[in-house]
Image 1 (cartoon, each protein chain N blue to C red):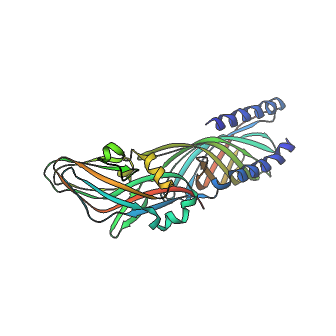
Image 2: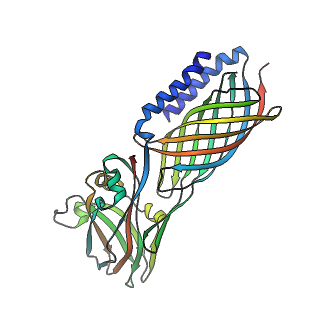
Image 3: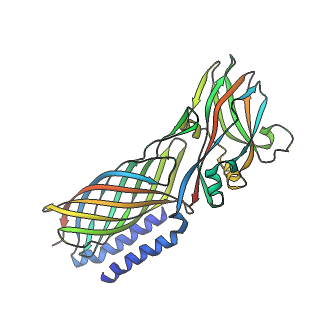
Length: 174
Length: 181
């Protein structure tokens, strides 16, 4: 048992050393401000380019990103029309692809349903639960950090997004 | 998960010879304290509670199955001027086993380390990780069979390449239940 007692701390130290960057990693929130406001009218698609390289938290860790831990698209979403609106965000890996994002891309987020003339603050918790295309965004975040998002609405509606931001929490070495 | 079960098998293997040698002492304890996330931008500190069953195999060594639950705190960030959003902290459930190296008799100083499984749950996220912990405890026997202990530990829930780390500070009470003659 004495031998075991001596060996145990050494095993613990060896495990810590083997853990390496696991020990020296953290979770960092990258917040990218979207154009303000964004308005999408009657089933048309509004696009905007995201360049995470303009965010210092991303630049500081971009070479050490191992995981994307959490994602959210937050903001004040307002349905300016009388009919119910559904809002989705799509990501197309190749922006030069011809056709609607539903044919060439991956739905990243949504649908968010808004009643006529309703306005909703989409908070971090609510938004994180609406993400369903996590892997597509993970690939982009771990890639060059440049990608194009498409906001798509259904029906004859007009939706405005104000104070919108994309939040990505990355797991990275420090 | 597999690593946790291996640890439990190893503990069982350690228990068998100690039981034959008649050196086992079993206790039951509860604890509570605070869990502080380390380098995590998306949650803040929250309370932690749990229970453990220290099994003294010899004067030199004890093992301790444990269970804990913590509710990490919410994090609010301002994404644009005048517009803040909040992320709920994770509810973390951890179970596993520690190995302790006690020094002393009535007052114990014991470094410890352990392995287990930690499940993080919150809106839109439910993930389980292998959890490692390493810490230092101080136990004071106030009356026979009852010990108060203070512990500080670094818990590391590993995804393989990165980990979520928490520094846990707890105060506990342990009651001696059974001693082999």
